[in-house]
Amino acid sequence: MTTKNNCRNCGEVLEHVFVDLGMQPLANSYVDPTKKDQAETRLPLRPFVCQGCRLVQLPEYETPEGIFGDYAYFSSQSSAWVKHCGDFADLAVNRFKLQGNNRVLELASNDGALLSAFQTRGIQVLGIEPAHNIARYAQQQGIPTIDKFFGIDLAQELVNQGYQADLVCANNVLAHVPDIEDFVRGIELILAHDGVVSIEVPSLYNLIKENQFDTIYHEHFSYFSFETAIDVLERRGLKVFDVETLPTHGGSLRIFARREIDRHPFNSVYQNNISRVSQEEQFCHNFYNLLGYCIFPQKDKFTTIQKLAKLRQDGAVIAGYGAPAKLSTFLNYCGIGPETISFVVDSTPAKQNKLVPGVHIPILPESELQVLKPDVIFISAWNWKKEIEAKIKKECDWNPEVICRIQGSSV
Ligand code: TYD
Image (cartoon, rainbow, N blue to C red; front, side):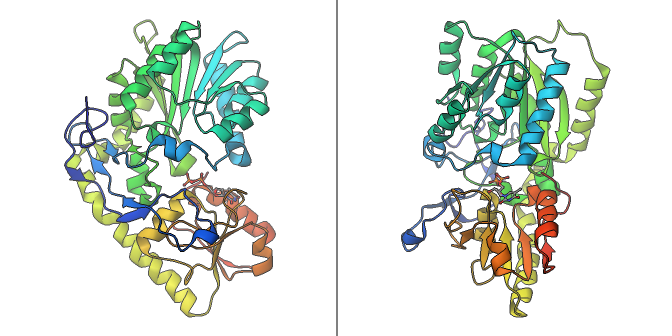
């Protein structure tokens, strides 16, 4: 049994702060302008690093029910994400020889973007999505979806009904799970004898290498290196047999695991993939290196403030492109508000006409760029850099200066 001060993976007492980003509002709690004078909840954004298994983690300040009860993010709204899903469905169908009688289960299936790709390839699908509004939407699109949180209880309920999954997909969800034990044991339970689980997590190595500290926010409870992810899975009976590195979310890992490895032939290509990623991540295996990260964000804070403040002083109107959760962390940490960035545009209707949490920069539809013609565009959704740069090139004929904090990222 672990408490809030114990590692949610291995139970070790948590004593070491990975980085302190101060008191921050909830990054996805966009503020209604009529409520802008009301106090916002602020909580410490101070992840710890476990001395035992190296898992970087935030205490569960906010319950998953509070975060996901009604969620603003719909996967299908991004054409790049829909393409990512189609590519993965092709890969999985070919590689694991999935046919019409096989079952694909997705945990945190959102609006069914990935499952609909499997469905159009003739595979049986089931989604688990606790955000009621999004689950309802997926059901309306013909994607069977259970609107509950996944864990041992739900897995057992489904197994009792005779359900087992040949492929379990858990993309960008493990980081949001406070009770890793319950979630991963549930996967092990629901996996068919020969089934495969595919897990995508943003990589801690990339977070450090590119100083992506803004990907830290209260909804992300855990930050994984490959080695730590292996530890998380193997403690709960799942053996990792392959890994890929992906450009998504500024650099992610796609980890494949299954229950019984002995029955499968040794594959040197997979083994090479595992060795390559493990070697690349050597930095993350040294506990004291991880502790050293705590000073990294300050570097960006000062250079970005200086750069934006100088442009503003010279009279430039600065707009942000994209209002992702990471923008909230970034601006609140740097103390940048509407005095510097006049407005942000975002394609998500649920975010439009709201304010960025804490710093209260207005969020407008993308079409407002054409009206307000800012001199500078700061690509705040840097994980979509390529897509956004292409849009700016096509639509912003007044030639604004474009700034992006993270250079190497795409999708
Ligand atoms: P997302 O990738 O979900 O990041 P986070 O997990 O940090 O919230 O958010 C990307 C945001 O960028 C989302 O609100 C949509 C917005 N966006 C646009 O407004 N226009 C675009 O062309 C793209 C690609 C994204």
